[in-house]
Amino acid sequence: MRVIKNAKIHTITSGIVDGGYIAFEGKVIKEIGKDFDPKQWKDAEIIDGEGKDLTPGLVDPHCHIGIMEEGIGFEGNDTNEMSGPIYPELRGIDSVYVKDMAFEPTYKSGVTTVNTGPGSANVIGGTFTALKTYGETVDEMIIKEETCMKMALGENPKRVYGSAKKNPATRMASAALMREWLFKAREYHKEYQAFIHKVEDAKEPKFDMKLHSLMRVFDGMPVKIHAHRADDIMTAIRIAKEFDLNVTIDHATEAYLIPKQVKESGVPLIIGPTLGYASKYELVNKSFTSAKVLEDHDIEFSIMTDHPIITLDTTLVQTALFIKEGLSREVALKTLTYTAAKLNGIEDRVGSLEVGKDADIVLWDGDMFDVYTRPSMVIINGEIVHKV
Image: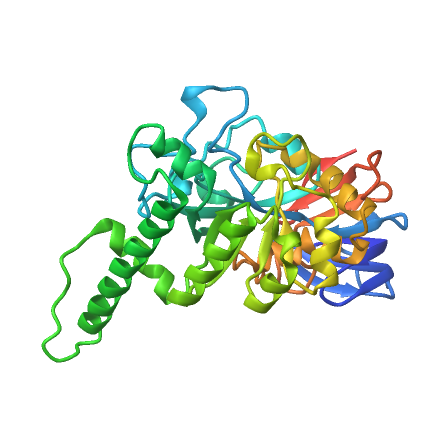
């Protein structure tokens, strides 16, 4: 048993416990309280929090760590299978290399969980996987093997396939392909459900790996749709409504230009990366004021790095710039923890400090949104993985 006492504990879901303590054993949080009694914990290892801020480990809801490896070219890049635009059967977990040099600076910066997966070259590109950022193999780091199905609209699919004179070469074709395969998967799902529930005269559909994977979106598997521009965001909303999909719109660069429509849709967003330059036309309207607009309109959102587009260890730098332009600190911290976990269906394990959840804890040596601040201690699954 370990106990961190005398810390300002940001639970995220139950407020702040100032001068409190948090006890954890094995991989799990056992107790959080205000009044530390040394007699109760006489057999525990006691760590003095020295009044510092203590938060859950940060969660990145959309990145490509371990799949688009740093410092390596072709050999380490397994982000996009560009032999065809429809690949729902691909799984990000099968491309993650946990010896990617990016993992160490990531957990040392306080990011303890990542949702990593395929890129956006394909209209339907496969599934993301949620991992802890510290461990020896992907199997021991896994939180959820498949968190969501990746889809994409906008420039990327039409550039990749249009330049090769293949379908899709336009935004229209990307949307049509997405709808075509969703139609197919919905019919396959109906036939499969009828068969497994022994509906009279129902026959097992001929196995199709693409449709067998994609049909899970009709069982509620989350879908993340890559869309930057306002027109692509509205197309994503239209398709999500048509097929009753559990969707997040990822990147959502121009969502702040159409906040009323986004709010009315009820679709949550995963915004970013906003740090860095506009590398393509879709990004010309990116702005650090976007998060404040979304907060002002009560739109649920979290913040992504899209690592390695910007690296995971700059998570707080990017977020501080959103705060500089009006995003509240409270919402900023929530977007990086609980909301990021919730939008990927892993909030039962990570994203807040609660009894029974994973002991992923960060103790900060100052204001976490100050560029000079760094974690003085990072704990993942109850293990101290970094300490200064």
